[in-house]
Image 1 (cartoon, helix red, strand yellow):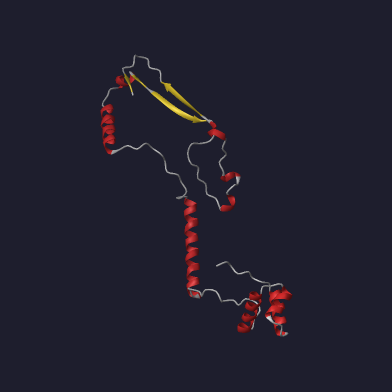
Image 2: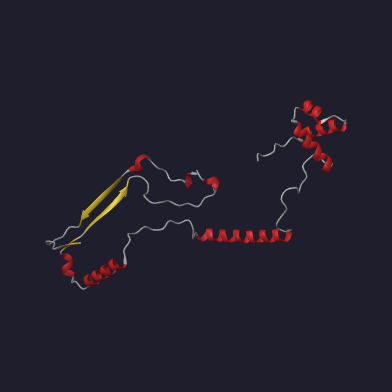
Length: 187
């Protein structure tokens, strides 16, 4: 059902004055430019309530008592206090760290390899070539950036992360450490 259009109190008063002057709903509708059904509704409502405006309390009845309302307010204040305290220690709004998945078998193999390497002498490590690679973003970060903000602060400078088209690019650098002797192992 479409929502009813509320008529102003001035218009309702005019309809009731015409009704009290013994005008018919058809005549009142012609003078006020309202549909006859609306005039009849206003007149019937006036007859039953003796009031022109809307009566308060005609909507759905309350499910809670005044005491229950006070209790809800007290609980809400406690929850607000808890939220503020947790905001101070910042346990929420963080992004989980990403790391490669390693299943149980692979973990055991890695642990076995690490224990074997602990037994190697220092001279062994002088013959190993060490290499590493790193990625550097030219603009911004790859990860998600989380901030604490309210709805109104959505586009504040301190709550946004600047971006550029096409991600801004990145550079990957790979390096090998110099070895004085010939290398026998590469890890």
